[in-house]
Length: 348
Image (cartoon, rainbow, N blue to C red; front, side):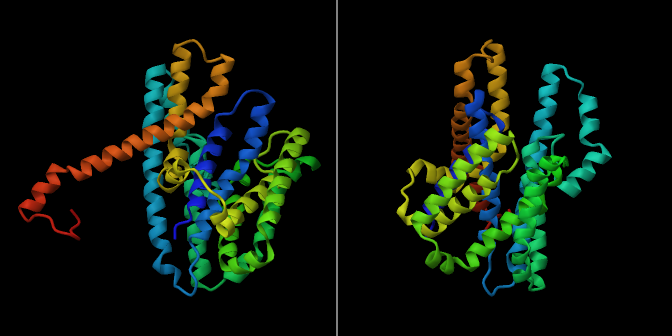
């Protein structure tokens, strides 16, 4: 049976990503952004959880997943490349300088090593990072190293927290891409998802519903306290507690949690497109705000992330509906089938 609670949480996590990139004003916005930091690790955990194969050869499934994400990455990067060019043509910015920056050798190396997509759009780093996670998981499965990989989880999480959190207390500084990448952020939570799947029944016996609620509450309180004490971070100790507790709640006790139908529908079909396109919708909203001279209006700043969330979902849903309509009334396809030029299973 499909876990509708997990679908609902995917929708919520996608909306939380929007609150990271399009924040609310004031200290409230800072706290909401901090609490939203669990969202991207949550998606890595889902990817690992659904890439667990008990007694099956990884070569049956993982290459197909890699190919699927590669296609999505090519589409996403092509979309935002055209989008950014269009923006600069409208605003009159130096297009040549931007293209040189995007195609600079150093930036390409950062993409390959750290999955950094900042010169184009920073949030796209998730896609190459996920590809690397699948590739490494393929090797782990082929050489039967799953147990050893699970032992690496605390090491990877420790490296993530050191680079992204604790190092600043000791005068060290790491660039964001040196910990927000496929290894420290990606594989640590990806492997956590797989480990939870393998030991699912053990966790169900040992950890109760109320315990997970308490862990999540502690995580929320810790995140707010950490943010107020140490400022904005890419990751918090509380973020890890929130992520793990919410994930286990949804996979272990999801039947006890009722999700609104709209959330489950969005999570099942639209969570990734929302993650992908929300910045483009934010750009359009910013243009309208500037044109209407209300970009600094406090009411607009409070409404903006919620409006981006709603408009993104509505626009994607309309595109999906349009695609379904044209698939149903595909005149070219009907003619091909009518004259015997297309049959079931044909590449056409």
